[in-house]
Length: 59
Image (cartoon, rainbow, N blue to C red; front, side, top):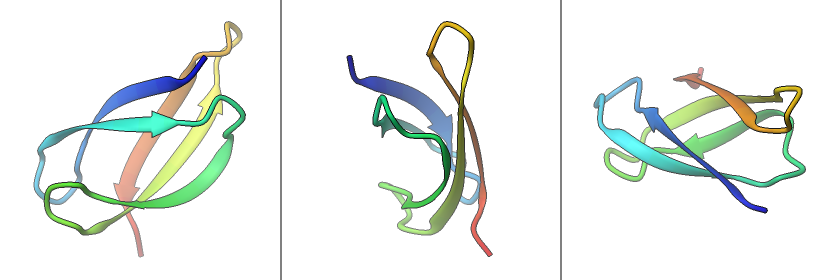
């Protein structure tokens, strides 16, 4: 099963749907689909396997 989460861009504040691979954990860089600025995306998994995602500005 594929996971999608809705996150808010830390630059333009638009809500964006983000695809998370079911095996994904850790840190990745993703560009905003709206303003194209880079995010730092931290992905962890809850006990039920659903993604817990935190989005910050990439440095």
